Picture 1 (tube, one colour):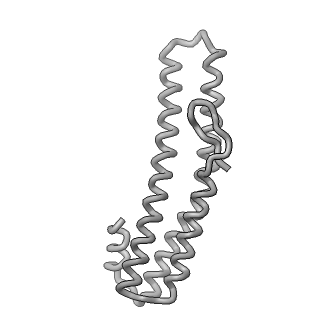
Picture 2 (cartoon, one colour):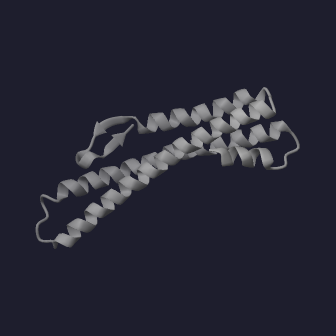
Picture 3 (tube, rainbow, N blue to C red):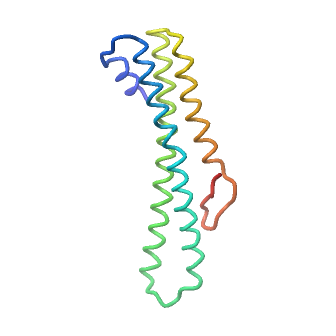
Length: 142
């Protein structure tokens, strides 16, 4: 959390506005990544749900094939969870950086920076709010 703020403060910029602009750009770039990532993650979870349901209909395959499929499903869920956690960490980093900037370099640009990471936070919340439960503990999101 602190390393982003420390980097933002330590990096040479011509003005405080440049630091705020960097924070705004970074949060905005992450906000643009939320929807595509979680749309793809949703498709992966849907495919894993189909895979899980298919286990009852497929009986001729060796047990290790089922084990590999279960491992793949667990890996998919783990990756999605890690990305979600990383988005939350980045939001916390942006918030901390804004607080540091406000103390060291107060500026009206802080309002726009705060707005940028609220957009990111809102997109993340909308994409990860469960809508319909799926088999095997996965969730389909909006």
